[in-house]
Length: 262
Image (tube, rainbow, N blue to C red; front, side, top):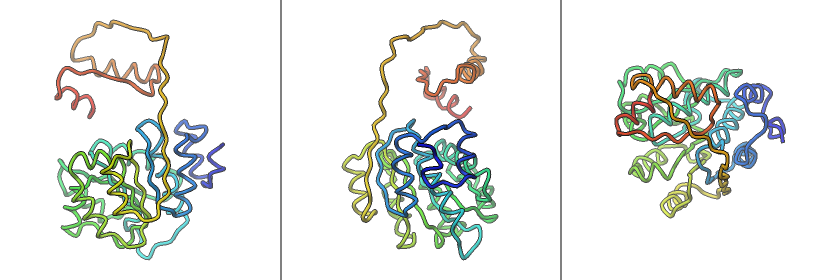
């Protein structure tokens, strides 16, 4: 099934094709029509299944055809557990929205408030944020929720594991009563189901399992390289061989964090 059959505009389908998708993944095929209908959704889908596009694309479609009382007020709020994921999701939004006039930004802790406040003052349609920084900026009256139409809790299980349940409940309590709620989680554990039970009414539920077939033709290489050139070589190999997934073992926690942010 092509993306055009899912109810997406040409502006979005053209952008999707440019990113390399030729047809929707299972989670996209099931979730996009539900979201476009304005329904609440609880979805179990792991990283690598295409879940980000499954909520970003229909949100862009709805925002591009809808109206708002106040221009450039946050109309879609995507809450994620980490800075890295906030940046990744925002990058995806910008890729898919390139042929629209919709804007987005990501806010997260560990950096100066000023640039993030300025981005919010200038106005965005879609805000991606970690829970703690969002609560902070809301308390400083730097962000308003009155125009929010859709809330996404992405990787909800990780947010609960990291102790964000109180912040999540604060965010939900401050949103309009008629907001559309979308919850995505790798697993629908008991804590996730309890969050869904208390925060999301009358939701449709889908689950997508990621099948990773065992590879019988694995090649093993030994590459000798200077320590200061390892990251550059890894980046080159990922691009050269177009690896969609890679498992990388790092000696130290600091080294892993440095590689992830590079």
